[in-house]
Image (cartoon, rainbow, N blue to C red):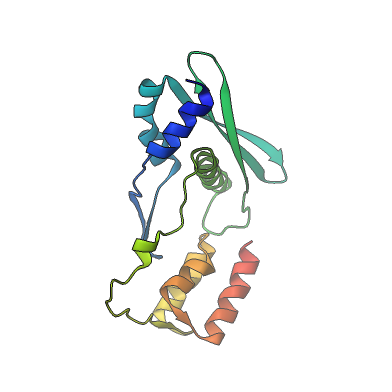
Length: 183
């Protein structure tokens, strides 16, 4: 079996649980470590191994490359992801900023190699005939707005906040300004 056939089979069979939880955005996600742990059974089954390498490209840019290597023939297939390091991210030291970007890059390089689709499937968004509750409104001068600001300052996204809340015009404008200054 060629390395391409092995990778194709692994892509079809691979499952990694979203075992981590984001308490602000109220969603589950998987980390690079979760993906690598879920790949271990395929090493022996298909006589392959996986590795992730990183290369600093300068200007706070990291390239992560995930590789599947055929243990028999030493052939390999790679996929990469390029991420920027947010050096202005509040509440983190520089090593933490690089570590966060590194983890993100590894996860997406592995996702590219394994064709992991992180979008919600139709069943996850189907209400099955049940009424959908309206999102709470997020306005300035509230505790929730203060938490939303802190979330963005620690690297969170406006998109995640928008999924949880219906934003007033004022709240949206303030959070957009904050998100732009954090980039």
